[in-house]
Length: 316
Picture 1 (cartoon, rainbow, N blue to C red):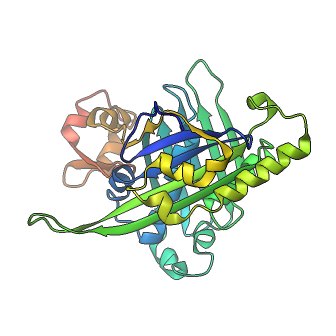
Picture 2 (picture 1 turned 180 degrees about the horizontal axis):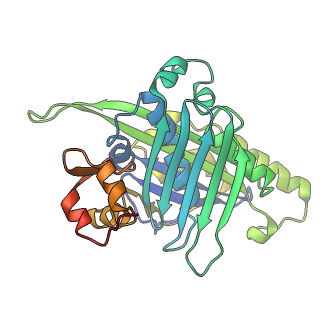
């Protein structure tokens, strides 16, 4: 294992390479970051679980981007959770939200294949935006399988011809209070992704059978990881990688710290409202006030009609 890793107690993406098995991967663990996002919303628990998985997958895939890059994961479907989006802004900033029908969610909660039924038929889109100098790329696949990880695996197999293993764990747990402070519920998330390296990826093998056997071995070892290992903040990430792949000469690199964020501000919302006509502003107002709530962080911004109409808003 590398001894130069930037250590972080929680909220990180840790890239690694399995030298002898011809595979690379990323380990994700989130505590405060995922709680900060999910805690902003009063989503039903199944919806929070689904958004937590989407954000973990987004952090896992987005961490490969260069500075100023953006990765967007988005679902659009006919299920109770009709829309789901998670953003990763390099380096390490994440956010997300979900749109859902509460009664429809209640109807399928706790059922077999709950997550698949929450999403229903639709598509998963993954967009990479590496800045104005680079071409924007988007891949779209059907929402097939029982969860988002399986849909992402389908994308890598069909679009990238890149064998991939992905496992994600999400849990809500109770933390006891300390020194007269009450206890509270919080969220944790963890994920492991392993991908087969091609010869262009830095590891060439003369025997194709050996390369395939090595990949199968790496995948089988990755599949032994338990949910509690992905979630446990007391289990050092390097220790977990060694536990899984110590016979394969695993090498970890510098971790990327993760944090919850939102780009909204009063100024941005006011600029958005400038695009509406005076008639539209009047229609939006209640008791002389226009209120706008950010869907990502649930922050509410309040403006008087007079201050909005005092800008360059014209009647159309």
